[in-house]
Image (cartoon, rainbow, N blue to C red; front, side):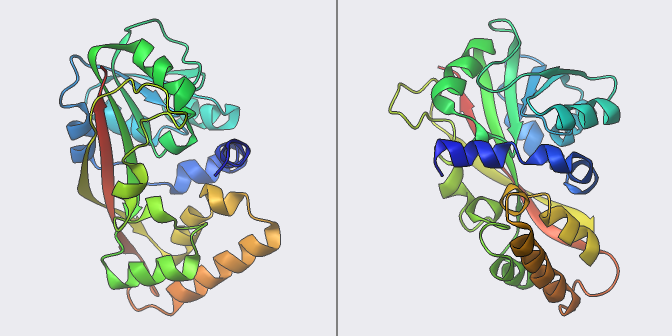
Length: 259
């Protein structure tokens, strides 16, 4: 998508901040540990932190965390749910931290919204020598038959190429690179995926999908039609028709080192 479309999608979450905080999953702890493994110290910046889903996992792992989020509504939810965490307004393109002040920068489902031509040098600036940049994506495991069916019925705006393990590696392998041909600020990427899952009901899974940017920016009639198709599919699928179930997921990680 072009810059204007990316900004429109990136700015869509604030209107759904409460639902986002309620329904979006956390991140597999094994994935976050792997992301941080080469970091030279415990200081971590959660960049584009949203309502704090990744921040909470970092806290649980004992990291020294600062969160940065550009959307006021998302930032307000983060501060409400994690009042002990230092949470600052800011963006990937203008990080309110001093040079070499963190050992790792992590971004949970946020790197696609960064303008890496500007954000790349800015992230490199705040990272200490040898510091780590890692993007994390929670993807639905479409190797499971009913999840593959859900992806097909939902359409790419709701469950896109970055949202399933079939294609997330190819879609995110260059997420750390500027799209302008400028010099890269980071080394070769590593990608690993870790098993994860989220307890859902049919209704709460529909609510989760409704917080995705591609759905949030839809015209109302199209959004209601999309969510109606998803609701009907879940009601007619034995694995999801009654009560709670586990949505099979993976947390995929892209990890690079500061040059």
